[in-house]
Amino acid sequence: MNAPDKEYLALVREKMPKSKHLTTVFRAFWTGGVICCIGEALNVAYSSVPGDFSSDDVAALTTITLILMTAILTGFGIYDKIGAYAGGGSIVPITGFANSVVSSAIEHKREGVVLGLCSNMFQVAGPVIVFGISSSVVVGIIVLIFKGAFA
Amino acid sequence: MKRGSTVNFDGVYVENTASVVGPKEAEGPLGKYFDKQVKDDLLGQKSHELAEIRFHITAIRYLMNKSRRKEEDVDLCIAGDLLDEITGASLTMREFDVPFLGAYNACATFAESLITAALFISSGKFKRIISSTSSHFSTAERQYRFPLELGNQRTPLAQWTVTAAGAVMLSDIPSKVAVKRATVGKVVDFGVTDGNDMGACMAPAAADTIVRHFSESGLKPDYYDLIATGDLGTAGSELMKVLAEKRGIKLGSNYNDCGAMIFNRVWQDVGQGGSGAACSSSVFSGYIYKKMLLGDFKRVLLVPTGALCSKTSILQGESIPGIAHAVAFEVVK
Image 1 (cartoon, each protein chain N blue to C red):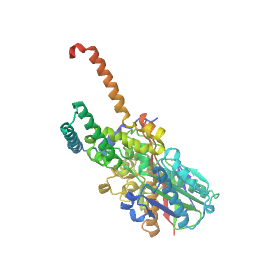
Image 2 (image 1 turned 180 degrees about the vertical axis):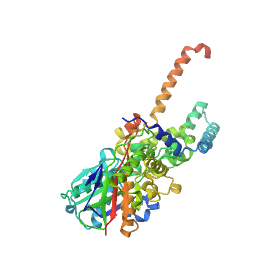
Image 3 (image 1 turned 30 degrees about the vertical axis):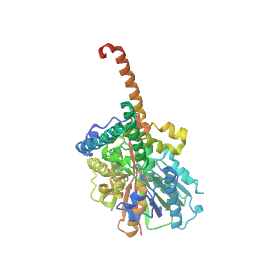
Image 4 (image 1 turned 135 degrees about the vertical axis):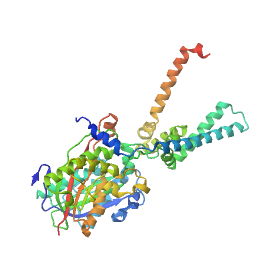
């Protein structure tokens, strides 16, 4: 095993092109904002629907609609083009999560339903679920211990 | 005759070549040189893996038809690709009644198979050998990176795997282009760990092989009309030139990179250029060989480059070594 060539690695850092952070941050900001505005619009629309929707129902309906929209856009090969432009702007909202599940499912459909599609569906989204569940457990324990302080 | 790891060949000729490319490659600057351009990169198959195999089969079949040779005229086929366990080449070869040797040196596989074929022919025991490689953007993305439909951004360092197959028929029958010499590369690791930065991984290996090629053959870089590395990409080529110059080999305007040639980086949005096992094979079979027949290039040094890694080795934090082999072609009559 050779030791890393520090001189060369420095040359690589100097010569190789870097991401244009300002441009990518700006793109992520406005596209992410637009997705949130769509969510907010759905929220308003569902609230004004006559019927007995509680605020929890409205939140769930909004989420479901966004996920459905993303799944359809992913299936038609449009969401990856949005993502190539938007970067974090379309990854961070729930639409990004939906895209990661649907894209993995499409990719592995050809290896069969059980061992292909189902076992690879959460290939990209898996870490998000693991960290989401683990952190909610940790936060739950903290709340349990310091319940008095939060009451 | 062998000096260091440079071998001279006598009596090994390129009988013919064939190349089949996908739509993006056909739109690129070299599009008109390729034998076949397909419009649909899935080729009506049910998976991209099968499509890549179809590309490979088409290239070999077309090469045989073009040179009016039957399966029994071909003594051996040395082929490889990037799929796990080189299933691309192996499944391609079940269509042919031809002996097969599988080769793998990542994107330098084409050079490995050419050198092996040239040595087999110069042994006098084999008359005609096909060496070929294939790669496909969609199979490589899936194997090394993310699902195709995932909305992620590519880094500016990323390269675009070429969707193509290239096949070359070598034989002992004298023809216009001969395989003159080759330098076998070493695995060179300078400690680059970024799996997106393939150019930087492979540049040290390419520089090492090129420098050794000139010191062992006694030739100068301006001896060749074209020195073409495989898939270092634009920025990787610059790194390679710096490394070679440090060791006393200054590459001039006769240097280029197949990955940089095959796409137009600006409007095709391919990052640093093309890559993949079929990058050097399709550019050689399509562009370089035809230019040699026309007499535009008389002496060419082809240096396919490979990054030796797998998804597992990268995730386990291993650095990515490179390899490059040089093969020299000359117009002889």
